[in-house]
Amino acid sequence: YLIVDEKFIERLDYQKSKAAKMAKSLLQYPLEKFGRFNLPDIFAVGMLEKPKLFQFKRGQVVVITQCEELWGYSKFTEWNKSNIFVVEKVDENGFNDYVFSRL
Image (cartoon, rainbow, N blue to C red; front, top):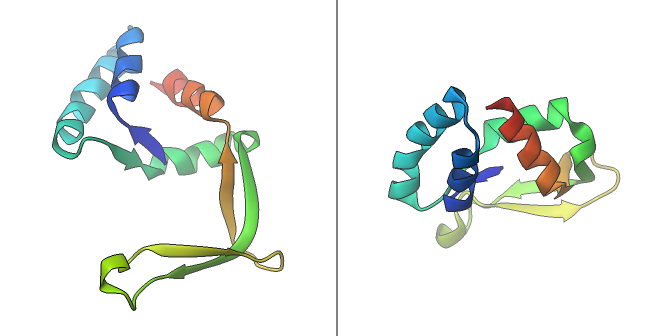
């Protein structure tokens, strides 16, 4: 996920493009309402376009449905024979540069 927070918004200020100005204006309201939030679609696109920015591992993902407090959370268990890949590590600076180059 790309975390949109005050630091992200500050980086938009350094971009002098119309797209950065528009993105800042669109993201300001949810940031004020939620404090920070994620943009998973950008993450997915980044994985497709820049896979070298990511390290993956295989495993099993289980969605928790038995505990009301944790309802909907997911639990990951590493398992090398799985066909499910999750991101283990992201080159944060490289990913942020990728995102900002697209604005």
